[in-house]
Image (cartoon, rainbow over all chains, first blue to last red):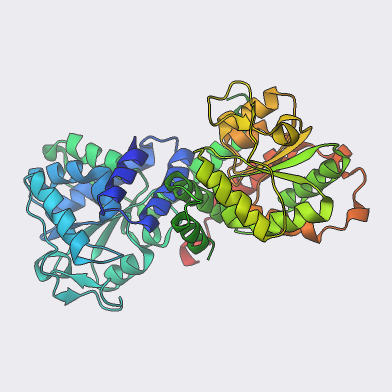
Length: 232
Length: 232
C-alpha cells in the first residue's frame, strides 16, 4: 500500500527515481524491525515529542518521500502542536517545492519552502537552500528520511537533531541527538496519539546511544532466532 | 554506479518501477553483508557451480533487474559453460521480453523467451509463462532476484533451485536448494573466475541450512559490533 502511494507520488512528480530506490532500502530495514513500532522506537518518540514541546523554534523538514508517506499525519501533528514545516529537497526544483507546499495547503497547513534565501553552510547549492524563518533559525529540526550530508551539516550548525530513519546505521541516524528508528508514518501516528499533558521531562532521562544499541541488539537477535525461520 | 545502471535500464524500458524499489531493498541487505562476497557466499557459489556442471539441463532465468545488474557476466558464463538462459518476467510484456533477448544477442548469446508456450503450474498467467526447452524441462534452475511465489512454484515442480538473493530471509532464499546470499554481479564474476577442473564433487559436502545459519550469524554479529560504529 505504501509502495503504491510512492509510485502514485512518483507519477505526480513529487517523488524521484532515487526516492523510489531509497524507499526500497527502508522497506528492508522495516522488515528487520518486524514492521511495527518497537519498544526502543516508542521511547525515542516520547523523548522527541518532549523535546519538541520544550523547543522555541522546532521545524519539521519534509521532502518528496516524506510527503508521500506521512504528509497528512505531519500536517495534523504540526497543526495540533503549532510547529512549522518546511519543504526541503535533495533533488531540488521549484516545481517540486511548489507541489509539496500546495499539497500541504490542501491539508489546511501553510508550510515554508517558497522563500529559501538562506543556506545550510557546507552544502552545495541548491541542496543547501532553506528559509530564514524555518530551518535556518530553528533550534530543533525534525528530519525524517534525510540525506546524511545535510543531517551532518545541520548538526554542525548547532541544531538539536531528531531523525526518523529505519536504518539505525545510516549517517543520518548517527547524526541524531534523538534517532527514531521507525517508519515515519507510524512515528507521526504515535506523536498524534500521545497526550500533551504527559510530556514534561521525558527527554531528560533519554539516552540516545543506549537506545541505538538496543535497536541493533534487537535486529541482531531477530536475525539469530533462526531455529524457527525456515518454517515461518 | 549499479544504481545508475538500474536507472539507465529503467529509461530503456527493461527495469520496472517495482524493480527500482526491489533494488533499494537489495542495497540495504548488501550493506549488512559489507558489500563484498563473504566466506559463506563463496562456499555456496562453489557448490552451485559444481551442481550446474553436474546437471543435464541447467537454465539461468533472467529478468529486467538481472539483465541490468549482471547481463554481461551472465552471457560470458553461459557461453563458457554452454548453459541456457531464459528471459522470465514478473511484470510480463512482449516488449520487455524482446528487449532482454535482444540485449543478450548483442553479447553474442541467443537466449530463450520468445516461445513461452508452457506454464509453471500454480502461477497466474502471464507470470507463469516459460519455454519447453528452457525452464519447463530444466533439472536445475538458477534464479537470481526471483519472486517468492515463482521460486516456490519451481520448487514444487521438483527442480533443483539455486537462488541468488541478498536477503537471506526472503521466500526465494528459503526455497533454494543452494541459496547464494551475494550480489549477483559478484556471484557471476566469481563463477567466471573459478576453474572448471576444480569442480567435481564440492556440492556433496555442502549444507545449505548450515550456510544460511552462518549468513544470519554474520549479519547479527556485524550489527552487534556496535562499540565501534558511532566512530565509523
